[in-house]
Image 1 (tube, rainbow, N blue to C red):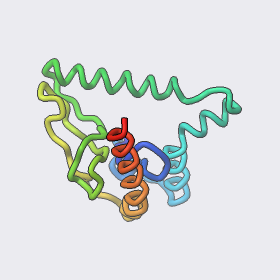
Image 2: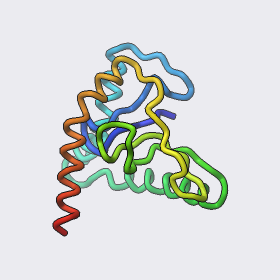
Image 3: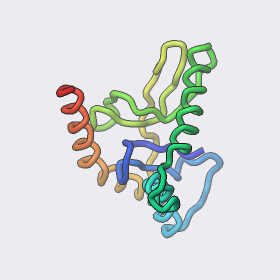
Length: 144
């Protein structure tokens, strides 16, 4: 289990390998490579399909797991999932962090936890891009 925080695309996706369960020790090269693969997973699938498809199955599987967690929470079995919600955890008005899902829906938005120096740098680097993406999305929603 590796928490993934931030946003939806590219550098706004930040896996927190320092918080992995079970604990894992990675070299700086491994950490960088796994972070980039996590950030570019959808693109990697499209490239593997030579442009003849997308990562739809991966997204559908993730959605099914998330829906299961939501339903379990709503049925009285609280769960914790990384969830993209309106948040005050960072300067971004929306942000994905671990959230407790329960009969109340999103019952609690957790903080970031302890971040490694690598993760702190990734968080700092993502913020301008994430905020720009959110602003673009809000403007789109207002216009439509």
